Length: 303
Image (cartoon, rainbow, N blue to C red; front, side, top):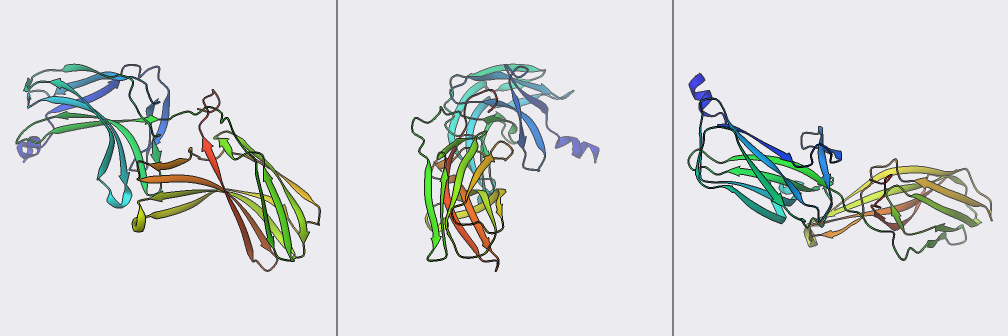
């Protein structure tokens, strides 16, 4: 029985190490099993290099038809789990067919890699970057090893960043004007604004401001939309008087936000909205929603 078990054990151990692994920033990434692991952080146009080490287990040799390392950018839809769509695929051949009897190390390098999209783990979709090592074998089945890493891309301050001004009202009952200082925010930004009550003829219980994330996956009839409320901020308790104005000051840093993603490879989009919610004393709810654009700013405090 032990002999049979030994027959199914892998013939070797594969490890993947990045060249600057000790000095490069590590960030937490949520794995499929729900646990969090620390992985190296890269951005587009960086060179990704390192070493692949293959070490046969004692008394074993590894017969193979070639060894290769691939750098893959992949999108996986959770309703089609296990099927990855590759939008980036680079390969380096590490070894020609032969036998490996002892520990062998292979250097690799992918210079100035184009990684246009950020790593993203959503409700129904994920986008990942991974190094994949394949020891190709025939009847015995290929041996695979994966090493994920994270990609974050940074944007400059937008040249144009208009304020948002909107009105919401119920005829002859309620008329509100609200104003936010800009329409594009970086992930550590502060939303500043004011809400003006021009007409109030209904008794208000409270007013909240919400940050909502809307993730759209698929296309056409197969589009699936998932909306999450990430933050809820009480602006007012009770009924305001006509002419009153209420300031808005909402810090984004505490919340788990990503940049806005628009139609990533025709697979998914992630958009953010400010949602103003008014509740009257009869628990009727009134909404006004406005899209905002989020981006990642390159600076020490906004990593």
